[in-house]
Length: 113
Length: 112
Image (cartoon, rainbow over all chains, first blue to last red; front, side):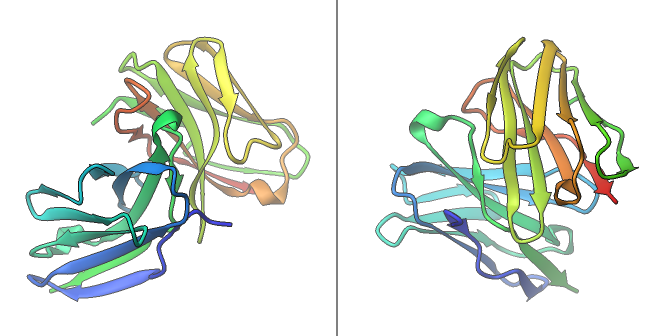
């Protein structure tokens, strides 16, 4: 059973608008969460992370929100740009597991001009 | 761009044949990982290494073995390839066990 789920396989957004990518998890031991971005024929690249002691982390146009009670996190991209078109993976790990990441299935974001 | 090279980039092989994928890094990072990416499953950890000759199993290790005889090289071997091992394989490295992973560009393996 998947412990990290991204229920939307794809998302289409107009350039300049907000993109919201969602991720749910079931393992209450997860305490560190990351988002990776992947372009075709390339490996994933780290985007942003958040520890469970926070509920928000911001880096430029990217903000990750964590709702521990709902076991839900989201990635907001504002404003969305065509270069943001990629597959986004949510990942989680427990404190004692280090980089043993559990990934979600990914969401393909398409930013339209 | 982290110095990670995966070889080959593409490979087609027949069921039952052995296959070895190579990951080479120039960053001198201690930790190395092998993941596979499949539709709907995201990336799943196969094996990882926390130093030369130190390796351990991940979530989907059955049918795979690894070796790390030098800091810079991490080999993934499929002793007898099966069609279920058709996938895209990614190598990743990290400096510590809780610093972000840096991934290579992947190897697309097709087992016919």
